[in-house]
Amino acid sequence: MPRIELDEHHCAGHALCNAVAPQIYHLNEQGYCLPPPEHIDESSRAAALAGAEACPERALTVLDD
Image (cartoon, rainbow, N blue to C red; front, top):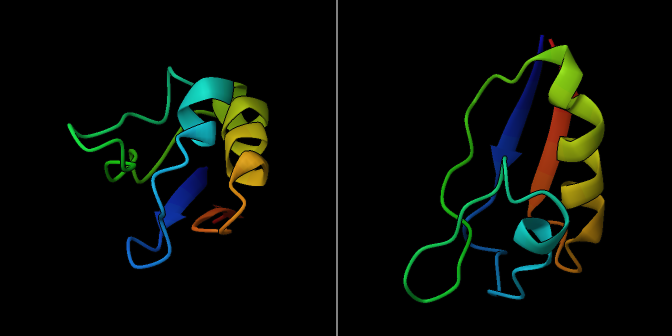
């Protein structure tokens, strides 16, 4: 089952993850990524990857467990 890791120290609030995959990546009031669900369904993997790849700070990583 894929999982997502967020490095909150690298998130700069560009919000591109949310623009690409709003069903997975949610933002706080300041526009920073909230911790995503740790585990996601395989059917959400492509969207999670697209959102992570959109992050210019590389704050998100999608891993296979």
